[in-house]
Length: 487
Image (cartoon, rainbow, N blue to C red; front, side):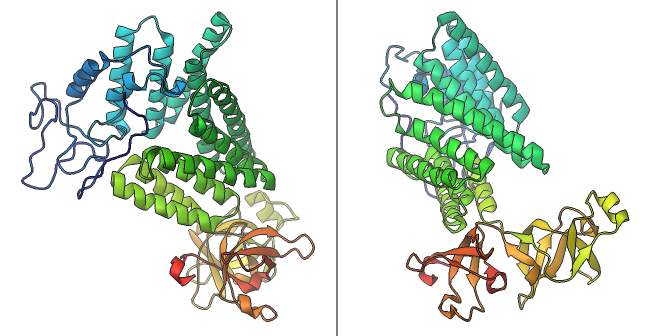
């Protein structure tokens, strides 16, 4: 019996995760099943999109399908030692995972093989909807991984519709169907989170975030019900609890949920690492979830450090082109972004009635004067902006364009640093403090706003330093985190 969490065996050199990849010049690639080099008699090319390196892992899709069908003949349908989510894992495994590097096939190669798996299930288990829905769940994930989000949503809704019909017919769901239901709701939650990130309209973002919370909570309920009758279900439930907490944290901004998101995502990550090792794809994905939990809890220093470690681990184990590596790089990009709020303290600008009508602002809105690269003055709406840097002496802050005003003409704008307040979670370094000069040069992050003074409260990387309110002009946003030896 194959363990779902089997550790990846590393190979030296090369780059992993590329389909149709040939090795270095002079090294001929061949199918590891039929041993033919290049396309077969039908013109079908060699493919590879897993974590293999060098000349290993290439095969024809038809050869993989034929080999998988032979392996499936030995599947033990009575073996119930797995958690229900992995009930049919041995049956599906030859189509899902490369037997050489022990990692999942990805992108279009993975999608093509799942279509072949579904055809096999239809032919051999026509009267078993549970097996078919389990296999179809893998296609939902594969569609998501190649960017076919709308098609993935349709397949997910189809699965849930069929699960609902089976529940009406049977009165209750088996553990296997409960696991399908939970995993599918989890995917829909992720889809809503992606949709939230794809819109800049605040009401649409909130709607998507609340739908994500709803789906994640349904996923958690199904997974908890399944875990009641399953062994070794720690990862299964911990993943769902982390997703619910992070979704609530992002949607509600509640401190309670922020703390829960950090705790639950850490449990999930540590559990996966203990089960599978740090380089397993499931461990890296759980690590990304923990990085997001830290990030939404305004602990960007830890989040960015963890995301950078995950990118390095994924490159080592799976290569720079692997889907998991690319996803980890996206997480690092999010966790390392710097944001600030424009607060009018200097060079305040009030919009004229004509500007209010043209730009959709009202008479109560005010802005600040900023500058284009050529020095031309422009009006900048107050609110959240992404910070891309400072000038040499730190007096000017460089931002990306924003909400309204003549700033729309610019990709970057410059404002007086006095008008910039680091957003919650932003890493900063203190400078210019007089009464607390011992904090100058100390690194921390803004985690809250002091209710009495209205000043940002900095929590320092050094655990021996108590959090302290700091004047806006005495913080510089930190872009490059120092090595631990330099902290």
